[in-house]
Image (cartoon, rainbow, N blue to C red):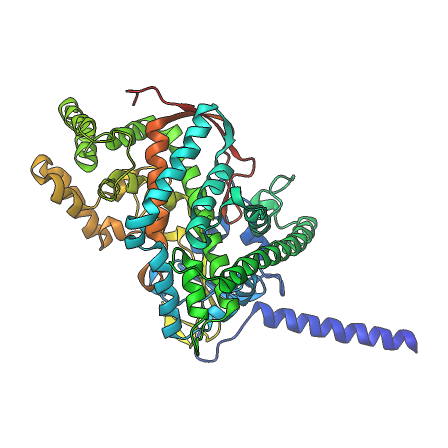
Length: 539
C-alpha cells in the first residue's frame, strides 16, 4: 500500500515537472508571436552558456550562434528571468536593470524615483563630474595625481600589474572628487573592500580544465559553476555591506559637521538631505555614492589596460599617438597619415612649448580638448573592450519589433558588442584602428585644404553606407537619453593618463595580458609590465 502511494506521488510529481518544463521552454504570448529562441533549463535557463569563458575579443559564441540561428532578436532565459536579447538599435531606449542586479547594486529606490528626482540626481553628478567642474577644479587634481604616480612607477622601474595599479590610481582620483577621500590620512581602506565586491561580481571559474565553450554544457561543470557563483555571491554581499557601512560613517560625520564650502559630491548630498520635505533619503545618497565609485574606475582601468596592450602590439599607432602629443594634434596626425614632412611642424610646436612660462606645467583644458587622436584611441579601446557587455531593460507594455511581440515585464538585454564588432558597421572590427573614429567635419574644420579629395570622398561613402557619421557608430559611453553622465570625467582621466604615460614613460610587457570574456572583459592572469622613464627626444 505504501509503495503504491509512493509510486503514485512520484508519478504525479514527474508529470508536473514535465508540464512545468514544457511550459518553461515554450512561453506563450497572447497578443502575438514571441521572437524565436530557446529557454534552456528551468530556472537556470541558459545562464551558464552565457557566462562561459572565451578567449576571443569577438562577440561571445552564445550571442553569435543565436544570431546566426534566430536573427537579430531572440528569446532566452538568463539569471532566472525571461529575456529577449536584442542586437537591434531600435530597442536601445527601453531602460531597466533586472531585479537581481538592482538589489545587488542597491539601486532599488533610485530606480523608482520620479523624473524630477532623477533630474536632480543627474544635476548633482554633473556639478561634480561635468565639464565646468572638470575645467575649474578636477583637471589640476587629476593631472597632479597621475603625474605623481607615473613618476613613482618609472623612477623605480617598477613591474606592475597594470590593471590593478590603474584601478588604484583612478579610484584615488574619483574618491577624492566624490567624498574627499585620502587613503594616506585615514585607516579606512575603502579600496580593499571595493575590490572584494568587484572581484565577486566578475568571479567565474576561468582557470580550470574544460572551460572551453563547447564543454560548458557538461553537468559536472554546471554544478561546479553554480557552487562558485553561490560562494561569490556571499563574498559580494559581504563586500558591499562593509563598503556601505564605511560610506555611512563618512556621511554621518559630514552631516554632523557640514562644511561651509561645497567641495565634493558628498557636500551636495548633505545639503539635499538637510532640506525640508526632501525626497532624497540617506539610503539613496549612499547608493548613489557607491554606484559612482564602482562605475568610475572599473571601466576606465580596463579600457586603458587594453589600450596599452594594443599600443604595445601596434608600434606605428603608438608612434602616431606620441607625435600627436608633441604637435598640434589633429593636423599632425593627418600629416602622418598622408606621409608628409613633420620636421617643420614639430619644430614650430616645440618652440611653443619652450615659450611656456613653465615647460612642465600641467595640461590645460584647451590642450585636452585638442587631443583628437587620443580620443580616437580611447574610443577604439572602449569599442574592443566592451566593458559593459550587456544592458538590461524592462518593457513597460507589449510592443512589436521585427514582426514579433515582446510582452510587458519581459527583460530586454541590449548587447552593445553587436554594434561595436559588426563588420557591416566597422571594417575589420577585430583590428585596433583608432583612425576609424575620424569624423569628417572635424577633419574639414582643421585642414580641409591639405586633404586630398579622395579622403573626403571616403568619409562621405562611409556615412552613406552606414547612414550616420562614424562618431555615432558605437555605444562606448552609452547613447541617447542613457548617455553616461560621467563620460567627460572618464575621458579626461584616460586622456591625461595616456598623455603622460606615452610621453614620459616607456614600458615592456613582462607576463600576462591574456584576455578572457565571461561575458565581461578580464585579464585572468593579470597584465604585468615594467615601467621605465623615457629618454628625452625619443618617440
